[in-house]
Image 1 (tube, one colour):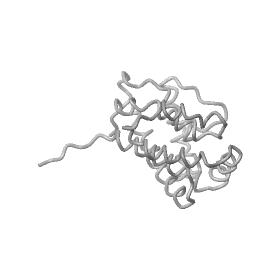
Image 2 (tube, helix red, strand yellow):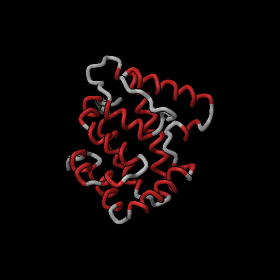
Image 3 (tube, helix red, strand yellow):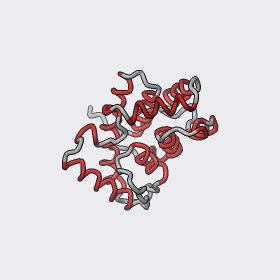
Length: 188
């Protein structure tokens, strides 16, 4: 289970993750975005700072080329979180439909032509949605977080193998989820 109150406290960082996982633009790398989204006690702080530092050594054109080469042309680095598990199976279509319904339930309109398992969109949803007072949130977020954890696990492994700076960004995202996991009471 995920602690939704704790997850909510990291909303700003999900906005940052969404921004960094979209096609790069010059303003995306302004240090103010990083400073606003991550305090030193944030669970993903060190990983995201490593990512940011690595990205500073590249020109915008190099970053854009790296983004396209990584996420657009490497099947194992797809930003579609259900793709790793289902590829194009019927079950994937069912998961996509459930995700779309979840977004609509919390007031998010799907962008035209985008699939609901697109990682930047999923992060944007966590940034924009208001779920704290919604009694249906715990049940509905269980599926969302399971998809994110599964998809980012596979993505992280592929990025690590490719020695990509994006590895550190995804590691920071996963550390954020890990910090929000409710710990089961240990039986004595």
